[in-house]
Amino acid sequence: MGDDLSSVDEAGLLARARKGDTSAFGDLITLHRQKIYMHIFYMVRNEEDALDLTQDTFIRAWRSLARFDGGASLSSWLYRIASNAAIDLCRKRKKRPQTEIELGPMKIDAASRTTPSPAEVPGAGLDRAEIKRRIEAAFAQLSPEHRAVIVLKEMEDCSYEEIARRLGCSLGTVMSRLFYARKKLQTLLNDLHEEF
Amino acid sequence: MKNSDPNDLQWEKTRALLREHLTVPPLQHPDFINSQVLETIRREGKPGPSTPLFPLRWLAWGGVAALGLAVLLTAFFLPHDLTRNEDGFISQVIEARVENPQLSVTSFRAPDDRGVVLWVEGSEFIPANESVQ
Image (cartoon, rainbow over all chains, first blue to last red; front, side, top):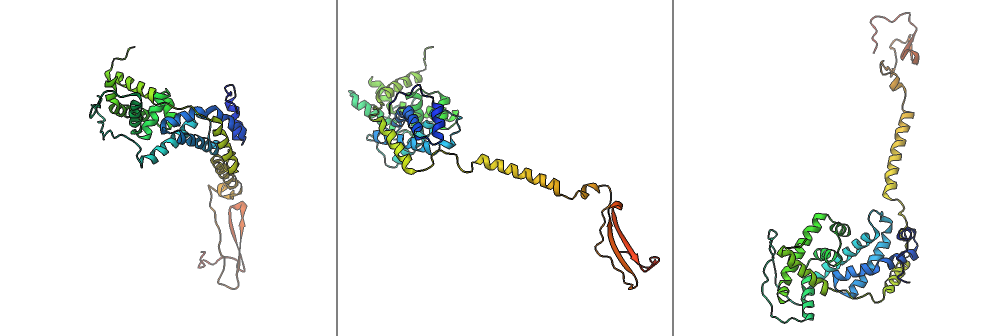
């Protein structure tokens, strides 16, 4: 199955898929699999899990295609399923922490408008692999919901409205989560700025 | 417009770090996803995304239709006398009897007179000391 489906009528494929046409549904998978996989990978940071969850997303979508009313775009709906699946996995993982480096507990004052100071400044001379490891570790410390907004806003350049649609929450919730997620990341990675 | 807020500038640096280092490896075998998903769908043998047997919308319309039918049936089968006699009296004789064995009494409805007639036989008149209950 090729990827050249850019000119395909998605609405037509969707209508056929809703009637039970698995071939049309296969074309819809082809249209969306890359972006869904990327979104999930950003969240879970693991190739195998990302592949599994991508498949799971499309299987869930098929099962509930009858309930998709077409009010939102198919893409937004798929993203919502994918985000929920990724958030569920991250929550399960949280029970068994995987972070390699311990950055210490931090509390962020909700009323604070300045970036908290880092607990300590690590030594100079961090190489690229070490920086990547630090960033991955910092990202892993975010809650699944905070990860989702960071991925959608900062990595995928979505608007606030689109994020709200994709996560199924209000605009205020999106902004609030983004504020705290940014603040926490800045705190965790503040020392890296001083390196570069 | 240039952004001069130190916090925003700081975040821009963090954002650049995230975008540079939080990378996603390319999807190696994209068709594998299609084949796995389609195989699962076919193996489940479900009707797939067909419409559920009784969707909620159908149930709601069924309720409305049943209510309408009940109103219609009530309008057709309710005794019309109830509405016609709004300004008069409705009388009904449950039981008509006399203690005098020489007398007999019969009751029957008289729709034209909107009441019940008591037909007494065996006496020219009803004695004054007889009570009508």
